[in-house]
Image (tube, rainbow, N blue to C red; front, side, top):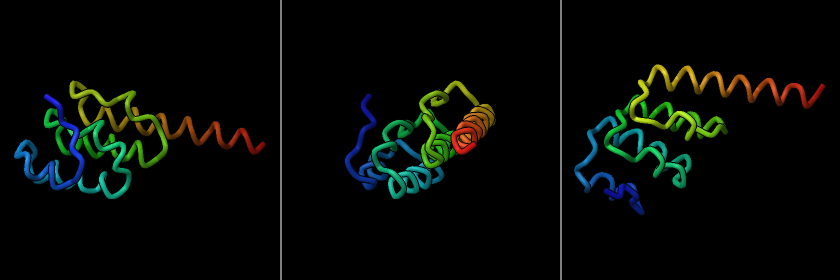
Length: 95
């Protein structure tokens, strides 16, 4: 099944997502609509969607942990680790 929609309202009309999931999709749509399709899947719960959205918002490649089989806590741990690694790389560039 293809979960790519053109507009936020398409997610609402689909009936595939609960209110919490729709809230994450809405936030993602407002922040960076091109990345929403990567987590616009009803197999992700809203907490997982948030971790993916926050990763993209933080400038990291969240596709590394965008797997429904990972818990949102595992996703959070990976996201934080990637963000810290990115921060350390940036810090080293300015030394």
